[in-house]
Image (cartoon, rainbow, N blue to C red):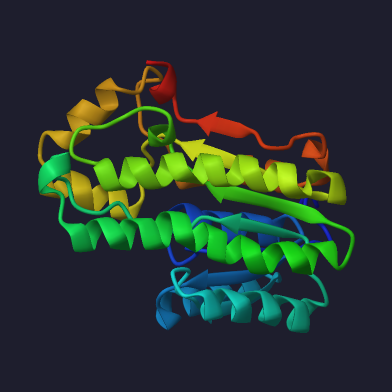
Length: 253
């Protein structure tokens, strides 16, 4: 344990798998008390149990970030359980279907926006007051390489992630001088269960995605977790309103 996050209380959304799970595990290893949230009780309970067995501190909580009341309870639980809130990795998200813009299902578009974009706003509107109450904190919002470039058939996802950058920058300006730092993390394609499912559904997709990564491979969840840990730590205390790309060169292509 290096103690990068020692003494901090951090919320991780979408912690049931992929980047969120890797982040919850790493944050606890680095000394944080973690509130790991996700949409199913079973997955977050498993993550919390794994952290506690390793000697860390963690509470697992079912949260749907599209529901404001869930996000309020999430922050309330963190403060009641650990006394404060110092950081949050707002990571929860879905990819949605693949379809041309004019054929994209309206219900799917609404769902992607509700989780990926409104969900982050729901989280921040409760996280920020809790952080202000104890002198400040740090928020990292999971955006995407597709926040700045387009992708065929992913109009809902691209729109939601571009919105995350706007949301992040505006909130950073609102609260930076009050001690709450808000930044975005933009992964490339990462080997997560969600992404693996997409690639299994479209046989040519893996090869196409690999070709978009000049580094020659896809990312690992742990690599994004490392970046998020640093962004939530005091070592990044002059960073505000930034978008940090950890994408194997995807957005530079």
